Image (tube, rainbow, N blue to C red; front, side):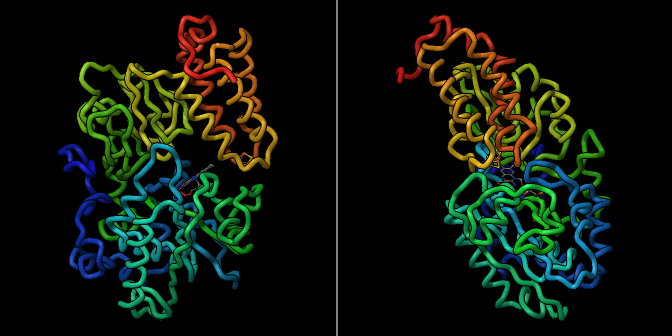
Length: 435
Ligand SMILES: Cc1cc2nc3c(=O)[nH]c(=O)nc-3n(C[C@H](O)[C@H](O)[C@H](O)COP(=O)(O)O)c2cc1C
Ligand code: SF4
């Protein structure tokens, strides 16, 4: 539902059905709502059969990249005699994204069930849930739910009486954006500095503690019990446009919008209807100027580009951006685009782990150049310089944080060039004091 607002009639409420329902957080409450039936069913299946079901459903990773989940699970080695791990990525630090937090707050047992099914399917006896450091309440709720799951025999040496061991260990991060990147997360889990690793080897070959590991996002794993309970064909049928994008998607809508919140849509839902119908549209007297649809790391879209855009992986790419983590940042005509892009660049410069020269230097210089511009001291060649810098920052580094800083700069200059030029020409008053 559009939590904290009541559900909108055009939402497809699956993952968010119990958002706001405090009783669903407890083991007893979850059991009364059909909880742990999917895990029970899975424990009587073969791991390969579960992986096939997830492949058929078309579920793709909800952490940002949209990689097919069943395929990812199938990459884990078989009968290699080594311990395997599942790591649930609950870091959620992408600006504008706040859906995993709500899943953990309201349906902790649903996530535990998804994690246990995932662990069973990849022959892992242990799943780590890596929770963002600042998530105090979700951490408490998850902690209580894990304790209840052990007390009721769902987890442990004989999970649901199956004779199989499934453990879940909660691990609290220290609040670094880069620790959401899967290999940085694995380093952090091992007690090291959260620096991304060079791939290959991929986590399925050498992940946590050098052993085969799968990393999945909270929303991805929370969808799994629903697929097992209702069938892959049902999930596959949740699709309004493109058969490559199936299921429901939680969209975290924030910014200049009447009803910010998490809206659960069927893949392929029109972006325009999400903005103006579900989320209530603009504030009185304001017009839509731009959106960033996938968390701050994706290209900015103009109001015109949102008009006929369908919200799924391919639909947003066709309009020049990406679904990403579906943190949907709305900006109205009061927005100073140059200043907002500068704020994003400052975030990436602060969060860069600094291993790669292009990222460490590129994000820092982007901020310096933009500060100069915003202080009314911009030079004629600064736009070209920013674009050259962005080019050097794209596709050349260990992880894509560097590309993420470049994306709003390049799309911002392409689509709102006049606003940058106004700062250079003096037509716009400086927004920052000169340094
Ligand atoms: C800089 C950076 C930050 C990321 N942050 C997150 C995050 O907070 N949560 C998340 O699930 N994935 C995040 N990802 C994506 C993960 O690396 C990984 O692809 C994802 O957890 C895989 O799960 P999925 O296949 O279920 O989407 C991030 C990636 C990068 C490059
Ligand atoms: S791109 Fe940036 S954040 Fe990613 S590994 Fe390189 S320096 Fe670190």
